[in-house]
Image (tube, rainbow, N blue to C red; front, side):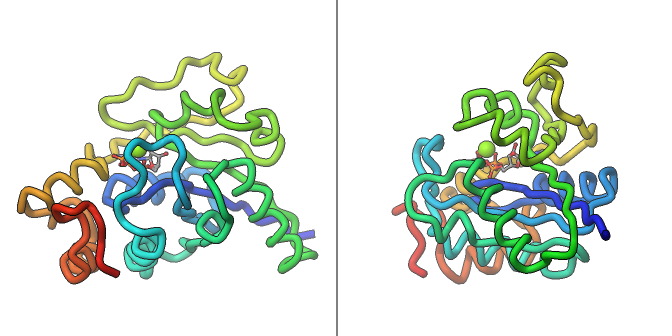
Length: 207
Ligand code: ATP
Ligand code: MG
């Protein structure tokens, strides 16, 4: 039986930026993933404030950013599910979908987070269920300490890579104050933000 190596990269992606993309490329090659699935959150319960751009805009920007990357795909499972996003549901839905679509292909699942998000996993809903469904992968992130070795009894893999020191909140702030984001997001994403007037004063897009 064939085995496919599948990564799941969840995030608010409000918006997606070069830090996400460098992390994704590194994880893809280090773990030899056949596919890396970007999954924008629906209503993000652990974010305060909740996402500024609509789920549709955030997904559209992910699609634009990954369009030319072999093996990168995006999923709307978290957007379509009502209510707040929990990673246990993300993995369950993606795995059901995979079994339905590819019944003859076994999959080995990885869930990818940055170092800052990884240390939160013990506080997420059903951490042991998450660990049963996927191997956790933490990517180093500038300004964030490496996760302690005993986190989740050490049940994670660390990918050490010098990702750009970029955060979505910084991009939203730069747009709001009229500064360039050209170096921080793919040009198609910058154009989308401009065209849809995202992250302006109201904090809401028009699309
Ligand atoms: P915000 O500032 O709104 O929190 P963010 O830049 O942290 O945005 P998220 O959508 O919260 O982006 O992140 C999605 C995932 O990507 C998280 O697991 C996060 O840790 C990881 N990530 C984001 N930026 C980087 C980066 N520069 N290097 C490594 N991982 C990153
Ligand atoms: Mg974040």
